[in-house]
Each structure stands twice: as structure tokens, then as C-alpha cells.
Image: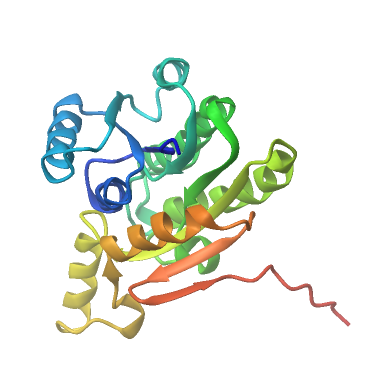
Length: 249
């Protein structure tokens, strides 16, 4: 049986790197995508050191650069799974949020996800899956994250629509809202700890990137469901139900 191929954006750190390690462990072929060719080569070497029989390619592109994404899609060959993990934050209170903060986060998280998905969809084999990364901030909002919440809410809408449209091509599209300590979340966690005199509120007790990766690689890629929004926080796994309409009287 041929190995299945996974392309992971933002693959050199955080959840992306955890995904890469878990995928190599489970004997998938890997395409590590990111902006920095040196970091990608280093990560490829690390994977091959720990998993000598792994097949690991790299794809150097910025998700915001449409021409580069398009070229990567044309040269990557067929894949089975696309994991849209690349993202960033630029948190600030609404009255202080700059247009640069807004554009930076919307462009990377939402438009970047569009760019990669748009150009790689035709490269995904039937029976494959697109995995989006969203956030609980998209579902409930989060003070100081208007830009991030809006971008990640857009990803949920994109997931829902593509799940309906791509079903006829035998492609599934699902979304994961992870809660994990990463390079991106640690600064925010430290600020919150300071605000609460060194003790985190219960909702900010987060799991690890490894636990998120284990769920995605070991469980989600095998699911037959589509259009779902899953939640992962440590060992606590679940999914969000569809919005419920309540008639006003």
C-alpha cells in the first residue's frame, strides 16, 4: 500500500512541527511548507534523523504570496491531506488596533488559507481531506483579538462552504479549534498570568501541541465526517454543534 502524503503549512514550529513529527511517526509522506528554507531544511534533517525511512520534502513559500503558492502547487505533485496551519497574531485592544495589525492578521490567517486551499485543491486525491485551523476566539470572541477572531471566523465559514462544494469530488473539509501552549500563545498566557497575580483562569489552562497533533493525525484524518468544527485542549476532545435558531416572539 502506497504511503499517503500530507502537506503542512507553518511546519517549522508550534503545532505545525508537532504535526510533522506525528505524521512521520505514523509513516506518512510529508511536505513541510514554510517561508524559511534554512529552517525547513533543518526540520527535514531532524525528521530523517529520528525517522530514517521517512519521505520528507520541503516547499518554500509564504502563504500570502499567491504566485509562490501557485508555483508550489504545480510542482508538489498529488497529495492526500492539506493542513492549513500557518498563522500569526497581532493582538491589541480595538481602540489601539492599527490598520497594519488588521491587514497582517487577516492576510496571513484568512487570505493565506484561501491562497493555499485555492491552488492545492486540484492536487488532492479523491478521498482526501483539507484540515483548517481555527480558534475558540472565532466562536465566542476574545478581547484584544478582533483581527484574529474575524480571520478565524472566516475560516469556519470557508470550511462549511467547501465541505458542501467539494463533497462531489470525494473531498472532506474539517476545522480544528486547538488550545495549546505554543510560541504564538505563550506571550498572551504570560500577560494573563500577570493580570491574575500569577494564576491562570481555568479557561486558559491549555494542553500541548503534541496532543493537538495526535488528534489530527491519528483520528481526524481517518474520519468520514465533513464540515465539522472539532475542539482539542489536552485530553479534552469534542466538537461544536451547528448554531441553533431561536425565534423572537
